Picture 1: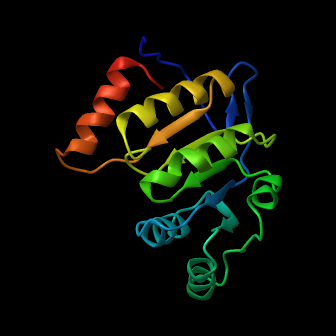
Picture 2: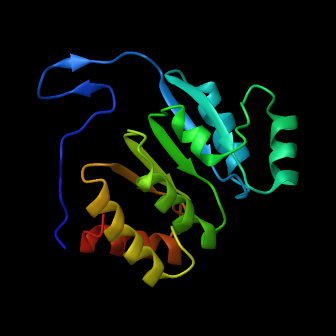
Length: 168
């Protein structure tokens, strides 16, 4: 695959010169990864974001998150969460569940514009490459961010390989 460079913005229709200044709505789909609390805290301090809410299939984890973050709406189904029309879907599941929730999201009729996948995107490189192909086919032009370690690790090497090969 070839790496594609595109000019793109969440807030503007670049072809029409139209700007959308409303806050971006973020939905958290799956919250088992331990980084979700840190990410929420960082985004909550930044301007320009509203939180649609979250869905977590494990009730004990969902209940604890709802208790710790009372301002973050808990949705009872993933369909209801994406039905609230977020701009960005952030998947913070454990590795084996990231592809499941990614596939759910890209097959949902919601018109979100960005998808964040917790590192490394799947439990194995083979699973990730299959997922990347599905995302490109089903949601061409979707902005996708793959989380990675901030130092030289296997996850970062894998992310570089994915970008270099143009999988996303």
